[in-house]
Length: 168
Image (cartoon, rainbow, N blue to C red; front, top):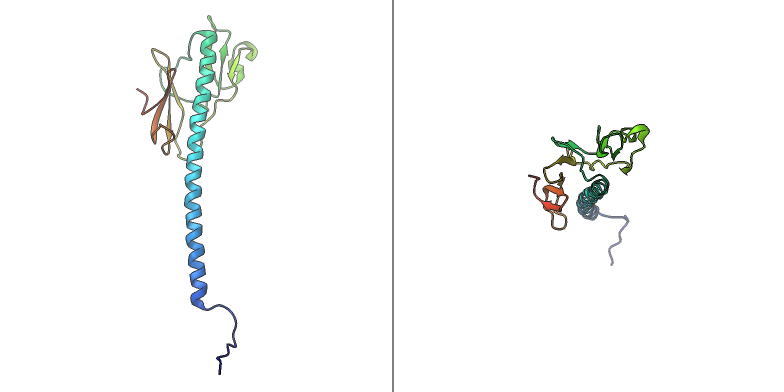
């Protein structure tokens, strides 16, 4: 005589196994997603710095001078949101300004970068720090992980290109 099962459905053990498998898969998905987000933020940082370099070189080609900034300034915030030519200066100079109104009389100076990008967060406190040097400029930025040939941590962009490590 065959055993007859009156109840249909899953046992408690079967349900626990399925729940455990779903938990493991969702944990793996969250870890992979966080890693992708971090790589995406780092790629944006490198792209932003390259755009800033291009704008600085455009300004230099017209005015033969990089913006003067003796102490490090955080780009993309405060008075450093626009990169333009101040045509009221003698001779005209490339400057960072809070708005295009800082680009000479009635904002008529050439705008090289209408909105200097701010770095993505996290981490908090991360910035693109611009400083003029005797030979040109440096922009220091921080990566969360290694990207291409750049290591995690501080990296430096100068008129010569992007190098690993903090700016001198």
